[in-house]
Image 1: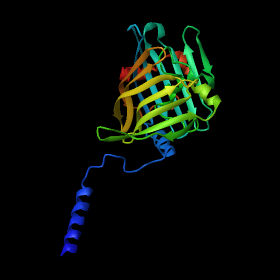
Image 2 (image 1 turned 30 degrees about the vertical axis):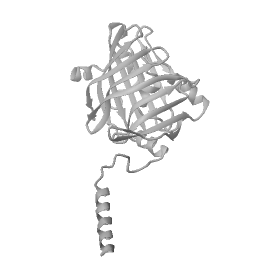
Image 3 (image 1 turned 60 degrees about the vertical axis):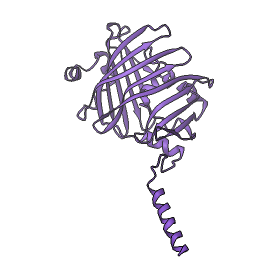
Image 4 (image 1 turned 90 degrees about the horizontal axis):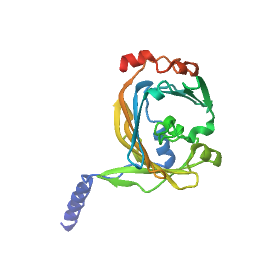
Length: 277
């Protein structure tokens, strides 16, 4: 009889444990697997929207800028075009990036004052983009960490409000990449439900804290998560850039030949502005 009661007690205990909510990740992934999941996060074939930048300095003064953003992706190539529309002094200034799967990336900048398209060297990835706290590399990476640039490791998982986040760390694979990126390391809090970073902290090439990126809102665009509101704070300059994305739409029929360097002097594609302006 005693043996019978022990069996019943064991069964009840097992049942009770089975219904306790699981607050920790059920699958422990490696750093490489987490980085791959981020890199392979789904993206739209093409999307179009507006970027609104607000730059604030330590004294509280603000500068605002707006630009048309065009992003297209195929298995072999990612193209990004940014065409400034406001203020008047920056209108028609534009940036174009072609990232190819064979690593032959190309970037161009058009400044109306010079009336010429300038090809940017790969070493410019760490340069600041148009007075913002984003680098050219940040603009292109789309909150992903290029597998060919970083060696990854994992910190201890964080549990917040019953949700578990991976803490992904990265160090550039060599000094050349470190100098190009302008970063010696990063640590990012990753949401495994979206594979988007919630927060990223970077150090500069001397391994001194440099800036913090906070993702404040995501938007689902045609089945794909897209950052629609984020903040970049430069710790060394006490300067920040807030970016809000508006009117973002999937554009599956976007002509792939639209984003060409020799088209930059013509400014933002007027047909897209008429449709979505």
